[in-house]
Length: 176
Image: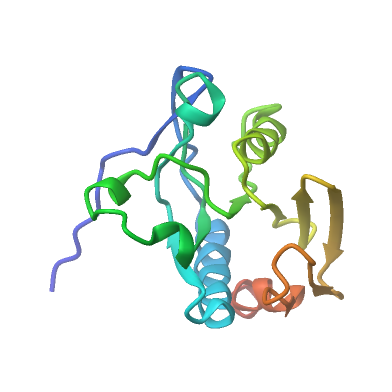
């Protein structure tokens, strides 16, 4: 059996500037799949959970801005009546955007992305720190950090409640 691997890189636009998205490493990929699985289980029929999907926030922000969060969630109500063609690259920000840190992240990029998602009206942005085994949650009201010993919970998305250690469990079991 053959596996096909795309050599096409993901492109983002930051303030009108075209940039290649940082390629994920092994740990990043493991945690991305784990978080997407957790989100899917907890979201139920509330909406769509996506990985590596382009979101065009240019209209909301006034400059060409297309980001590709590692994991995203869109509420079902926001999808009602939208065509499949329109949803190829939604012209809005996700309700939840998850960015997993990579060793090759550019200085200041993570902070800029968090602020950009919030300006484009994402309700929740998660910054996942692999080395620290922590999740930093950002909303319009502020930020909260959760260590691997805590339960993630937020009033913004009350259904999204899980042990932070669960997000890193597959990574831990593979590296023991």
